[in-house]
Amino acid sequence: MWNVLVTGSSRGLGLELVKQIATKSEFNAGLVLATARSCSSDLQEVILQAKGSVVFVALDVIDEEIIAHSAKAVEIALRGRSLDILINCAGVHGETHGKLALMSGLEYQFSANVLGVHNVTRHYISLMKTSSTKKVISISSIFGSLTNAREVAYAPCPAYKISKAALNALMVQYALSYEEEGYIFLVVSPGWLKSDMGGQDADLTVSQGAEAVLNVVMSASDKDNGRFKNIFVPGWKKYDGGDLKW
Image (cartoon, rainbow, N blue to C red; front, side):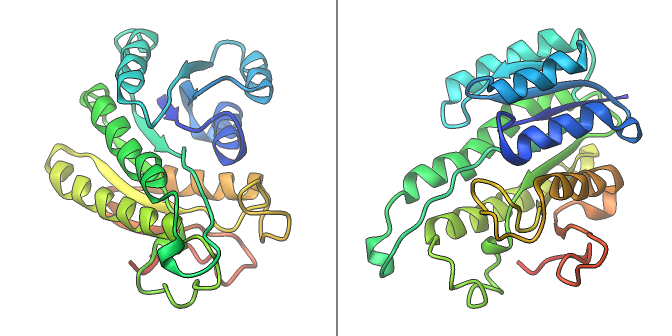
């Protein structure tokens, strides 16, 4: 059975990932560690229904001291078992209206979307050392693609785009650094979801996005290390399950 940790679990995609991991038998989950700054009422309901298989651990991705404390709490919760899968889902988003010189929030979005993922990964990676799975999946975005930058220029979120491009580069470096130890690092774009961030005009429900992301997680193998993956959703040409361009 796989022990799985998800960051950003209080709402949106992170919450839905925890819910599906805990309830889908094909995911073969052991302990699901749901982390966030605080435990929302929705997450609390998932924990109650899971009857012990989901545990909340407080984690703020922009505070490394809290990250370090959370890793110790997770180690205790695992009771000598390994952490098998880490899903970096926590992230922030902001908009800039006007020319790039007006961009604000770059430092904050970098701290959460890039440095936060780095610090979470480096504090938790030792808990994965004895696992036979060792998968680290980071939720990215097509907005982070440099190749497609002009195609998504309509979206007024340059700081978000820059931070996701940097996240992609970070995961590639992790993939190269740890491949000889059997780790699998990849980034996944979950599609345009009907969430607080994506809005109600988006393509997919959060449930559809989470299910598609988990299909990528389950099928990921050594050959996927260091790749930028699109989700697969039947009936959608844009969600073809292939590789996305950097």
